[in-house]
Length: 300
Image (cartoon, rainbow, N blue to C red):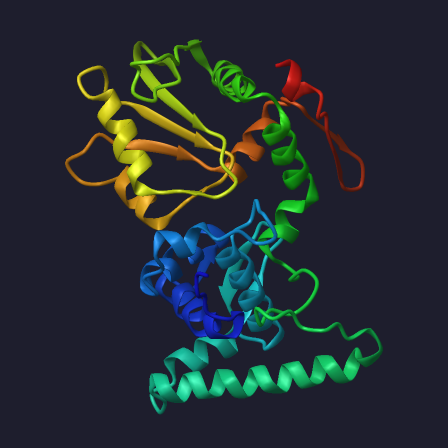
């Protein structure tokens, strides 16, 4: 059993992460800072919430942001950018307070907010799970902002035959402007699944890619192995997964002195499939009406 802090224990790290980012940050940026500052292990980052695709840390951070918003310390835009409010900034910059005082103030605000919510919704109160997170879904959370269609889309990709993911990645690269893309995965290839050629103005260069159809997190070891497989063959790599990447994996991908490896996680993959209309149809009315064509992923 991997231990993880409860959502309310992540409120202070979340608030300070937004401050460290300059007063605002995307969900991904905030999560990266918190994971690094709290030194979460790869095992902790790999724990999924209800079998994924969201990790348990992401889920609890979503609740931390939700409560900080309710407490008046953070606010968020429709694009998922979270920003310190005037009260949040004042709390972090008050010269008369030290960090212990600030943590105590957050605990007080949290207790008051929880009481207010319970009093307002007594008839609808849900029992809290044992993990210490409230019931339901956090408002303005990663799951809320990315919407249900992304989970449906990832489940469709996961349900398709294994070789379809490599074919899907190849199709995506072609749609994204690669002049060629070929599945090359075979024994002795060291984990390389394909080779694409990308043209930038008058120059073209090879890009090796690897596809990992995961429900959990891809660690730094996978990035090192992939880079090793490219050694002597090229220095441009693209690692694509349906899951997520740990903070160590992201750090390894951009490590000084090593060829960089670009990473596409499940969330970004969904955005790209939507952008290039691969298995995703968007009908714009007053709001986007997104439909996932699950059969596409078995026929790609």
